[in-house]
Length: 261
Image 1 (cartoon, rainbow, N blue to C red):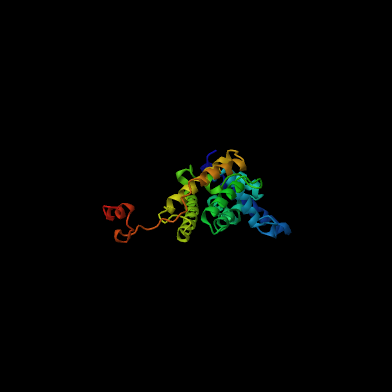
Image 2 (cartoon, rainbow, N blue to C red):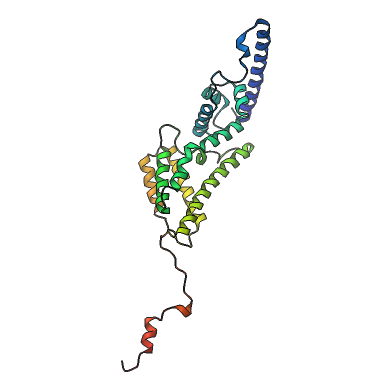
């Protein structure tokens, strides 16, 4: 079943559920049924954070288009009108799930970038932390941002743009940390921080795919060690002295010696 058809069925289900609840309310108003006066849309013990966490895991595992409205209803234990009233459309729910993912589940990213004053050590810590995070058993493998949205239909261009923006933000954080390393002198002054940040961003996305394909934490850490071999030489690049300030070469000194020596 196509996503557009599922969306139409979802809308129809919402309409039917609302009609049914209106009929029930009318009957209750005549019969004094207290249950109908609880209010519409949400279960008695609705927890928004828990529901968003469940939606996040579902989208993380199956992607936006691979997650049906039936899947969401089952995971969140909510009817279609409840989801609509609480979170809006499926696209809005997905955006909220991304926001949830960018909270605690990716806190390690910023923490590791600041885990050491030495830039190389900080990136090595980040590579190892990524290998650990991508293979944890308490959530889907890989990275939600890396794995989602790259082959989404044109109808969902806003979702693709949202995911691309999040990936760009991650690379910006990498580049900012590299610039700090250059200013501190533990990276060469001529380091192209944008290219190096893009390189590590590519490494992390590749590790995410490898994790989804079943690679172990040990294997991902080995990939990380190989990636660190591309790290630039940490020695400062000294500026070239003007010719007038250069010390005389050995050849020049010999040329000035008397012929009899």
